[in-house]
Image (cartoon, rainbow, N blue to C red; front, side, top):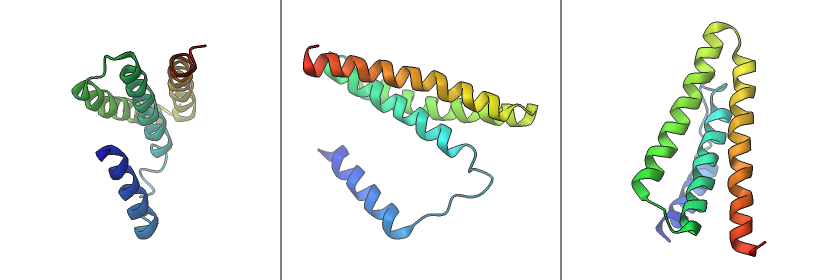
Length: 110
């Protein structure tokens, strides 16, 4: 319940304050969001499987975001940022859909 309240408060604060993303960080934000979604879906799947660990979730969440951002940063420095961004999105997208399918199977028993 605390997480849901925190999410609601965060969304309301974001809508009211309308934070501005610095232009230097803009290319990394969508990748970070996809990486964070991967961790969230993985955490939800683990919770439904009965193996959720909050420490593992926090480490997974933070490391996914940092590693994805570093891969895109490295790609930008090498001049292949778009290709590595696409690769990161594809890999994380596959993981997200895999976790979503497992969640669906668990919830609907199908």
